[in-house]
Every structure is written in C-alpha cells, then in structure tokens.
Image (cartoon, rainbow, N blue to C red; front, side):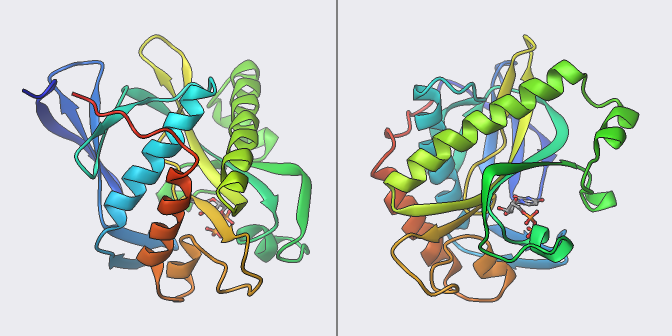
Length: 251
Ligand code: UDP
C-alpha cells in the first residue's frame, strides 16, 4: 500500500509538475522530459531527462540533508517522482558562480573560465514575464520581497550549499562552474533549499577532459546544440551516485 495518494495538479512548470497529495504536508513533484532554454524560446523533448534529473536531485538532496543543510526533500517514488514538503517559494533565483561563464561573460568584461574567488553571488527576480532580471540591492528593497535579515539568511544558506556542492562534485570528478537554487519557507516558517539541483540548473564540467566543449556535462549541451545531452546527464548521475547516499523511498 502506498503511503500517499495523488491529489490535483497544483502547478506546472517548464521541467516539473507539482501535485497535491492526501497529506497537506507532502506534495509530489513529477520530473518531465521537457527541455527548455532561453526563457523557453528553445524547446525539445529529451527522453530520459526527467528520470535522470529526479535521481541526480534526490542523490544531491540526500547528501546535503546528511550534512545538515535544510531541504524540502522527503524521498522518491518510482523513477521520476519526488516527494517534498510544500513551501512558499521565494521569487528570487540565487546564482553562485565559482568560474565565469554564461550570462556573466555576456554582460561583463570577464573572460569565460576565469576563476571567481570568493564565489560571486547574484540574485535574480524569478519572473519569466520579465526575463528573470538581475536584482540590485535597491530593487530588492523596492520590491520588498525579503527583509534584510531574511536576505542574509538566504545568502548564508546559498554559500553553505555551494561549499557542500563543491566538495560533492569534486569527489565525483566534476567541476562545479555555477548553479542556480531556489529557496522556500515551510509551513512552520523554516527557510529550506527547494526546487532541484541537476545539470539543468548547474554548469558541470568533466574534470578529466580539457576540451572546452567535450567537457560540458550540463544544459549548455542543449543550449549550444552540442548533442549528447541525455548521455552527459547520465554521466553526471553515474558519478554523483558514487559519492551520495542512495535516495530513500517515500511510501
Ligand atoms: N540557471 C538556471 N535557471 C535560470 C537561469 C540560470 O538554472 O533561469 C542556471 C544556469 O544553468 C547556470 C547558472 O544558473 O548554471 C547561471 O546561469 P547564467 O546566469 O549564466 O545564465 P544563462 O547562461 O543560463 O543565460
């Protein structure tokens, strides 16, 4: 017998669907095979991506939870379902960059591949209609999205996640270039890591490969039409499962 039953669809995003369950403190996240880039201007179906991202995220959340990082994660069910605590997602995307890449190099005179020490933390306003714009201190205050105390807590948690992910991916033979996370508040007001951590949301390079295209194991393969997207995600999964606890089954 299953420990929960599915309720209505609450929300459908670009890569996941969120369903209610018969428990008001559990929601079910279904990872889809849809791939999108450039604010959904580029779209494709990549068979197997949903399962891989679900498994990679679950492995990473297991390890982060074991190291004391608060997350929304509760466990997995089947190959592309994750059970999580419901959270009020804060509409801020937190990006941490350890190496310059992507939009940073398009907007600033910083060469791709430049190491960033200390890592650069950028906040973006999460709203596709506005194209997820970069937030300034003043705009953040103007929107009143978070208090100064909450903002500090968000940045502290994001930097803790970066330190843990750097260690994890280094052990897995991968270079963590940058990543985006989303944070949420639980029903009891706890700030937790939410959403997913996968090659859709992290730039990851193979530490053993020098060629600057061949080493890419993340969504940049899709963005840049390099091919082998699902194979690259499979490689990340294989490496990550060598250094993370096996995901617990929920239910
Ligand atoms: N990212 C993401 N979702 C977004 C924007 C960025 O997951 O809506 C991730 C992206 O995969 C990369 C990091 O955040 O790992 C930094 O992305 P960047 O700002 O360089 O934007 P991009 O190059 O994707 O335009």
